[in-house]
Image 1: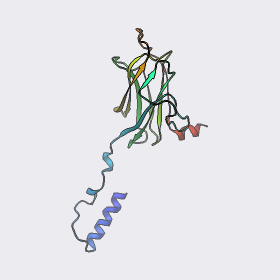
Image 2: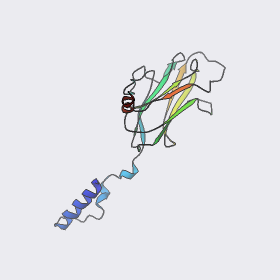
Image 3: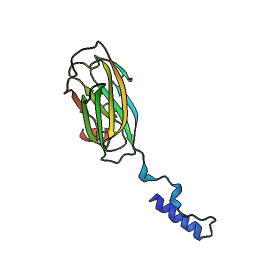
Image 4: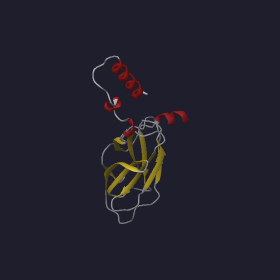
Length: 172
C-alpha cells in the first residue's frame, strides 16, 4: 500500500513538471518481500516472568548440574504469523536431541522454552537451537558444571513450551 502511494506520488510529480525521470520509483524502498528472519535477544536463564516470558532468573552460559530447569528466552523478528518455531536441546557429541518443543508463531512478543531433565543435568557442554520454519536461526552453547557421570543422558525429560503473553492472558 505504501509502495503504491509513493509510486502514484512520483507519477504526479513527474506529470506536473517535476525534474528528473523516475523509471522505478520503488527502487529506493526496502524490499518487504525479502525480510531476513532473525532470532534475537537470546538469553539462557533459570527462571522467567510467567506473564511476559522475559528472563527473570540467573542468566548466563554456565549452570550447576543441580539447576532444576533452564529456559531459553528469545524473540523472533520478521517471521510470518503461523511460522513454526522449534527449540531443541542437545548435549555435545550426542547426535540426537535431548528434547524439543514446537509451536506456531503468533506475534512479536518474547518466547520461552523450558528444559527440565529427569533428575539432574549431565555435566559437560550443551547447546540449544532455535529454528524457524525448519531453518536454524540461532544456536547457543552452554556448560553444565558438576561431577562427570558415565551414564548416558535420559531420553525423555519433561519439556514445556510457552507461547506469547497475550495468549496466557486470554486463557485466564
